[in-house]
Structures are given as C-alpha cells and as structure tokens.
Length: 214
Image 1: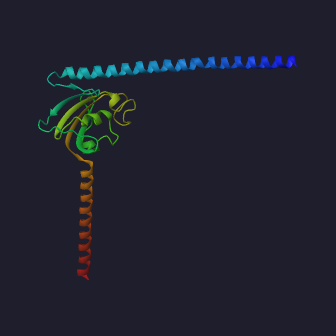
Image 2 (image 1 turned 120 degrees about the horizontal axis):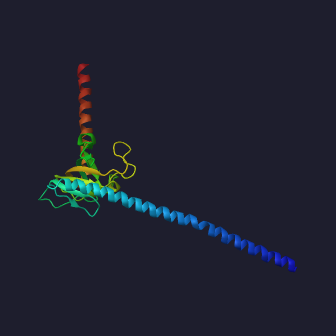
Image 3 (image 1 turned 90 degrees about the vertical axis):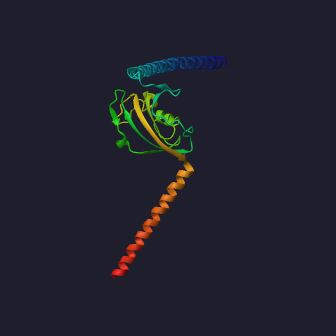
C-alpha cells in the first residue's frame, strides 16, 4: 500500500514538472512575437517619416504655393476657394466631384477624363481615406490640391493597377455640389419616372404609326 502511494506521489510530481516545462517552452514564442511587432512599428514609422520628407520637399520646391497641414495627416492648398459658402459636406450628403491623381513629381497617374465624374455618399462608400477626409473640408465650387502619404492613400497594396506599393500621391479635387441624400434619391426617382413616361409615349407613337399604316 505504501509503495502504491509513493508511485502516485511520484507520478503527480512528474506531471507537474512536465506542465511547468511545457509552459516555460512557450515563452520564446510570445517574446518573438513582441520583437516582431516592435520591428514592424519601427519600420512603419521610418516609412511614414520618409514619405513626409518627400512631401516636405515638394512643398519647399514651390515656395509661392501655401500648403496647410491637416490634423488628419495630409497637406492641402486651394486652387479655387469659395469665400461665401460656409457649409461643408457631412454624413448623409451626396457629393458630386471630379479629381485627378498624380505622383509627387507631377506625373499624371489617372486623369479627370479617365476617372470621370464622381458621385459619392459621404462616409457611406469605400474610397481612399485621404480623399474621404479631404472632401469634408471643402465647399461648393472649390478646387483643392491634396498631398497624401501612402497610409491614407492606397497603402502597401497600391491599387493593383497604376499606383504602386507605399506610394504618396497628389490629388486635385474639384467639388461641384452636394445635396442631402434624401433629396438625391427623390431626383433619381423623378428622373426614372420621366424616362419611363418618355418610353411609354414613344411606344404608343410606334403602335399608332403601325395602325395608321394598316
């Protein structure tokens, strides 16, 4: 009986020792993960600093153009400014605008013609972060040039077409108008009804012409 108890105690000791060793063996994994995160953060900081240096060079190379630094992490300058309106687009509005995208050297990546007129529901559609934030500071009939670091543009992946990985961008935006989303939906409904009525009238005229021929 005593031998049985000794065996049980010995087995329990071995089990506890094994658990401790197993737990201690996991520590390097979390330490490695922490090191990876630190390196990743340092790398991102270096990347952002490098892009901001590029943007600073662009700004300094054009001393006659005044750029303003935004708290959202981009820079902008007015090409055409609306001095009378005070209302900005907000969530619940639909915005109508045109824009073009260049690299920091001024080479056009996407022209206004290529991109076409834009209709955007503020904060309800997925667009470039910098563009989403920049539009909200604009007024009707304004034209602004924005300088966006890659982390608020197309980031690490680019757009899988013309915009490369970690590429800062220059975007010129012309904001034509914005209206309440409900008013926009009513306009669409009215246009659809008008089109439908025109189609009915056209169809009736065609039927009448066939009847006349008979």
